[in-house]
Image 1: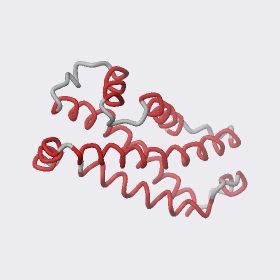
Image 2: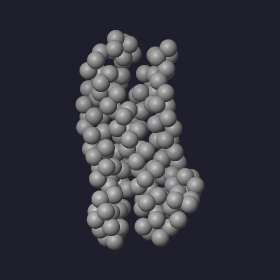
Image 3: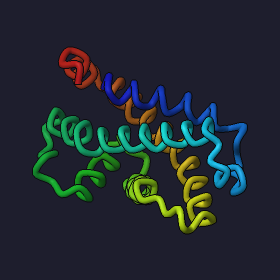
Length: 155
């Protein structure tokens, strides 16, 4: 939980720092303005780290603590189960966040218009990712056994 919280906190601060830059202007992106590029790199890194940590580590672990077979389930079944239990607002929305994460990992400098569009979509997805984390964290907090176990283990 602490790792996810740290990634989410930094991602949220980064998104706030990028707000004055939005919508992203192709000219500024192409000018390779260092301050903007550093913010965008930080955004991509934190988005990826938070999304990966939740999906690969925390989601299956929470299911295991709830008595589910979290690690044995396919990713799609895991997401569906988390949605059914109320921990994820939407399994489909999570899959969309994952697709955007994959797009962000593959930059195409020879297609600057596409890159600018994908980065803008990514920033919107980053806001949804932070909201998804906050929802998940709140649901964990409502389950005293789960919250206590995760806090004790510092998961």
